[in-house]
Image 1 (tube, rainbow, N blue to C red):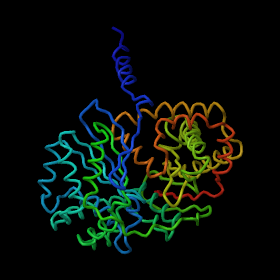
Image 2 (cartoon, helix red, strand yellow):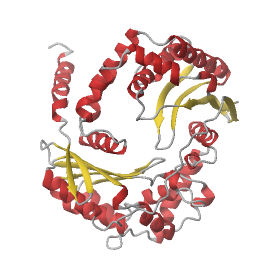
Image 3 (cartoon, rainbow, N blue to C red):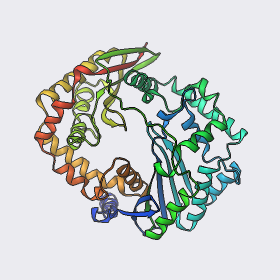
Image 4 (cartoon, rainbow, N blue to C red):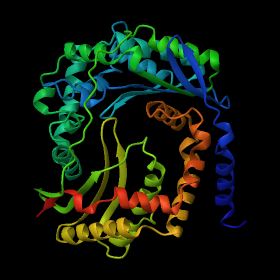
Length: 433
């Protein structure tokens, strides 16, 4: 037998296991005023659920209580008034239930995966965790210790330092400058009362989005919505953040850190998801420094010069701001040379654009890899949630690759000229002997 036969067999299985775009039949279920988007797949008795509470991310931490949203995330699976922390964890483990809270600047998320027969138990645990959390003294101090340890590690990590300094330099006094873990002194002062207050004001029926995938139909989806929101307050008590408009001018910020290599974060204003040039920008970013090993910056900085251990770029969209950012790491002696190559390449792209071959390769990669992101229910719920948060149409999954394919070279190069402005780069370096 050929040594390639087993590999070919695996590839065949993977190919035929990938979902077709016709399978992305996104439907809407409703319970009162609350809606959920779902995709039914009865091939396995598994249900994935992902929920988001809008305007409940760490940028919404109250003044003097930075880190409270993250603290809540750490406490949500630590028991309820009726179920101790140990019993809560045992119920999750014994019934193969995944319960994962997380957050970003704007929103608070909870990802759930459960077997269909355990759905009722799962939803009961989720409902009680949201509305009647234990927040016991022992559990609070244990999680506080974990967070403080994380903060100590963060404050010693060149990557984390660079990212935080960059955020602070970009956003200044805007809440987007806050860090997820918070400030140690303020985390030490957070009480269970602070966490209850945050949950009561930020977890409500009017700011929840729900996505479901797997062994679910219309009736089951309605049941899921009803159980999740049953005891939530009707309205969140949140003041939405102001729009950020004061993007910084070009600057290089150097942070000394005893490390054999230097981490560099660079960026400037980006593009909103609702912008007409978004898909052109998405493809452009892939060409500049996106996934894979064919990006211009990877080729010029790493392959040709051997300067960087890694390099990549992205357009980052927030609810009230947008950025184009990149990161690289290099030897301390090569920092200036690496930055100069990045700036020169960005200038060349902004002025001269990219080639048709580069655009074709980007389209091939982005459209070809897309189904791989959706081959599990957790991937589907992530996209279904994003679609709702971004105000996209319910048919987006079926049409997304067509949107990418329809972008022309002229549109990409026009976006490059408009969006890529190396003369405005904010650059943060963390390193040195």
